Image 1: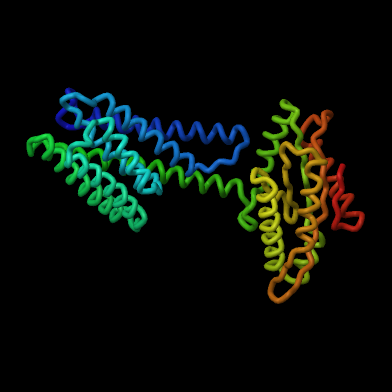
Image 2: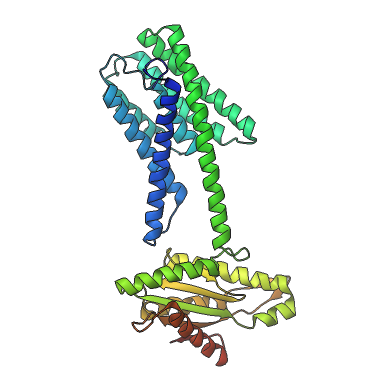
Length: 376
């Protein structure tokens, strides 16, 4: 993958090769993320992209090294090694321990059979140094043009040293080394523009997804997310016969809180209640989520729980809110919740059947003194 080794226009060939490598990576990570979401798993997109990226680049580099190992031009894919190091350190921002890098370097040197060469050890040290330098450069991003300049200077400095070592060890001509440096600048620039745009697009999409699915005040999922999740879980439960329990609850006397202490205090009660219950849910089951489905109305979907299995958790949530301290602007506020709980039944034809039953149980709790749980 160097300027002097291709028999067709090198810049175009290498451009498509690199874009293909990056596009395949992006496609694979997106498919994995979709698979986890489809199967109801918790998704950490950043963690998935990082882990897949490391495995992907290691396998590609090993494959390339094995393909060219022992040939007269085994050095031609050095720019790809630089490309991989910069991608992992700068764009994936992977925090790799030194010993892990050392193991990777020793693995590559064993593939190449270069343990006996001092310059190979020097090359390995510079490659590891490039990883850490690019990691530091990434943490000091400020302005787009300044960021690009820092990125270019750091990566080209590393490339220059690496090509200087290779040129010395293999007695490559100065014009050839200069061509390779120029080509290194070319591929690093292409990677910066392309990957940075992909990352920015992913960040924008993540922000839009968050805004669409989360309530701004309480930071929990909103009615839109509840409707989508409930629909998906309802259909899955009907097909697989796995249990699904719905917990619906209101904050008691919430209008009185607003009228007595003001809307800022009302907002505090909503957000603090949501935070308390969200922490409880994380302890119960990290896959459970709280939804704000109305003004002071919230919902929890206990996926794969019968009402008997969810009963203790539901009561613990109600008790936790009642016993919590709510203090705002010097006022101690007593907060409790009225709860209605039901389970998906065989006769239920649609989501509305389940929701209506939970709603009826909720209103039974409210009509009979509030601060209680009713199962229906």
